[in-house]
Image 1: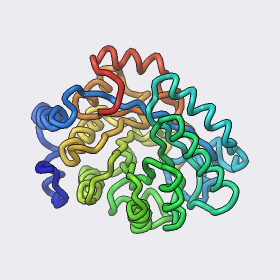
Image 2: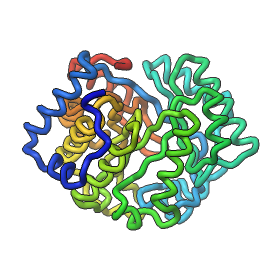
Image 3: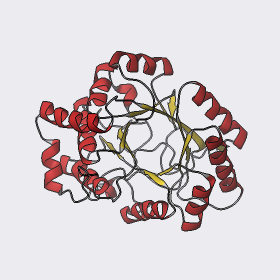
Length: 319
């Protein structure tokens, strides 16, 4: 499409993030309305299928064995196929169109757990819902089998910009994250890929994250924008809350840089006022995670989200 680019410069994106807020919102609105004139907002539900015991040391995550957070070591907490599909049916009945499933793994392992994952994906697709999986790194054969099962998208967030990455994760290289995205693409899977702000990064790090995402060709179909939830027991537990307007800026910039991607307002939303969330919708967010929990952190209630959409005057549903 004519307004899609894949050659954004770092200085260009940094300048975009620093534009006067009203000007930034105006441009984001212009782009957003061109591609989603009715401003429909997709509702996605997220479920932790396998919780805790992850070998990675991501500084924000309470599921790492390296941290002292509550879920550490609870690797036995894994749901079975029917339990997951029951939750998917409940999410669909509440209005969700997309069902996202997470496994606290460094990488997907072949065997019974992977076969169960494939069965869950097939079951969610049979319900008529989009299916997304996040489970760490994967190989080409696993990506192919997920695609054959009907998986809509594979989630693998970049977290932050390349230069700040080593301050957040030491057990995986940035290049490995990019290789995972490439494997998913080669198998024909859609990508769900975004990041987190509020982890001690600078403005240029945020611009660098957006640059990597916006220079992927094609752009990720879904771009989650998260604000850090500072969980006790993690290395980032003392980080101050994100300024809501900084989140609005990230959403607006993502909308401008990736015009047809679904920009998903994700973790940290419970700490935002209704007015701040509406500003994010105004800035171009066209999807929210819907339900009382996001993996291991809380999320606004279904009733609160219904009231949010009503207050904003937007309708749920895919664009």
